Length: 68
Image 1 (cartoon, rainbow, N blue to C red):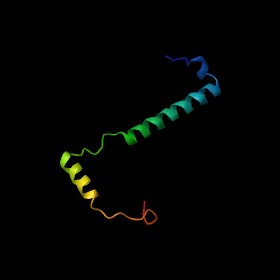
Image 2 (image 1 turned 90 degrees about the vertical axis):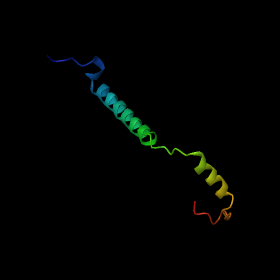
Image 3 (image 1 turned 60 degrees about the horizontal axis):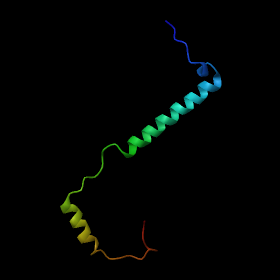
Image 4 (image 1 turned 90 degrees about the horizontal axis):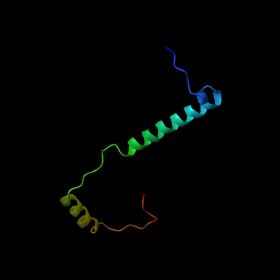
């Protein structure tokens, strides 16, 4: 049994627009999962405290010399 396409998909411009929207949605979903895939750092209280205490002891560098 052959299904009929909706009227807007029977026209070439409608198919192009629908394809462009589908590709853009796939790209958005891929970018979303690239950033929010569950591999976040789960810091514990000891590591946060150690980082805060040791960050005060680091020598300050000149902003012009910063490799950032």
